[in-house]
Length: 195
Image 1 (tube, rainbow, N blue to C red):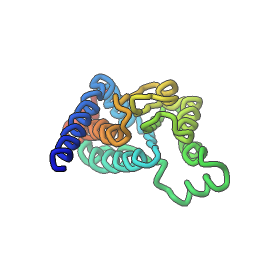
Image 2: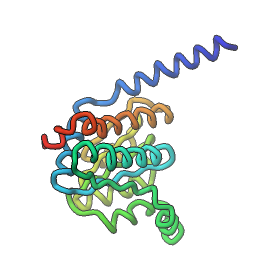
Image 3: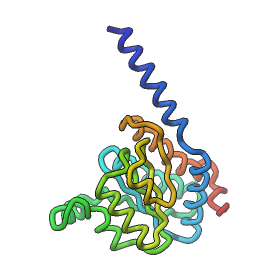
């Protein structure tokens, strides 16, 4: 039994490393520049997802809004669209679950703001609808998706594809990509001025 456990754990870690290795360095670099520009021009950054991706969105907003802002001496305007339970459930109840994110974005978004959508499948209807709305209203759109890519990869201006179809590995590698975006400014605050 122990050998089976050890082999499964070893295989899981090996596959997780492959998922992390698939994070496209050049695209992360481009997104660091986009966030630096948003900071400089006082633009809003919205992030959203369901389930584990919602947790990643919340984590990212906390890191960027607090730690990255502390390091740069300027405040990132970042808002997670999956954290306001009263508003989210009101939209879901009174409209449809597909409207829980776009209904909030309608209140805040301005052209050239940034909307980051996270979805392992790339096909979550409420996330897809939000990115479609964001693109139509001239926001800069970013998708972080798994190996199947889905509709989000077709819609987004910029896409980070985690080359895996395993939801757990996609979520873990997505958080690594998001940490890269935050820690770029935490560890190199001067990069906030490069855009």
